[in-house]
Image (spheres, rainbow, N blue to C red):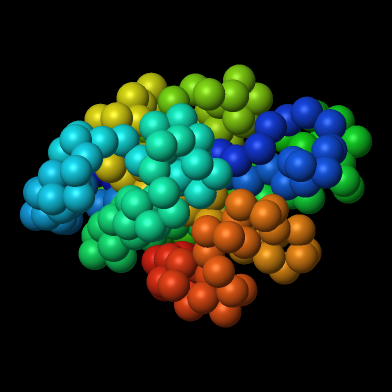
Length: 226
């Protein structure tokens, strides 16, 4: 039995456009379960112990950059080391991803936002339908963080991939879900770079725009569906 796991994460919300939240983004990360990632997970967890973190530490890219939550007491060097750990893991694991986004200033209400995102996801699945049909099982993992996204995912996948199944994910249990979180965060950072609206904390964390692109955005882009 061939099984495809799809991990979904989002950045933003379905509320009205605000300067601090100009985009809605979601990522689907696709992993063929026949390609084991145990070696990479073991290496990551060994590295986490070496840098003084719990081996089961759950990465949250946004708070790392903004120095929030578990990272409030870390200096910038420690936080960069932390983010680079999950980035290196992502580079060494075999997966592909697709990211979909809408600039919310052009959207008038949640229904329009849902429709715009549905069209993007539907077009992608139809284009890659032969790939999806290679698998006996397609399992979508999402933490059900946003009702609107949950409903949209259910509707689109049910219509185009009737054999798809949904499972609620606990982020601490799945490293690839944490990678999806990283990708969403870096997509948002990349868009903000293009629009010249990076925050002070983001500019401080990444340094120059050249370093941001070279060290973070470009490596992840190699995993993206073209």
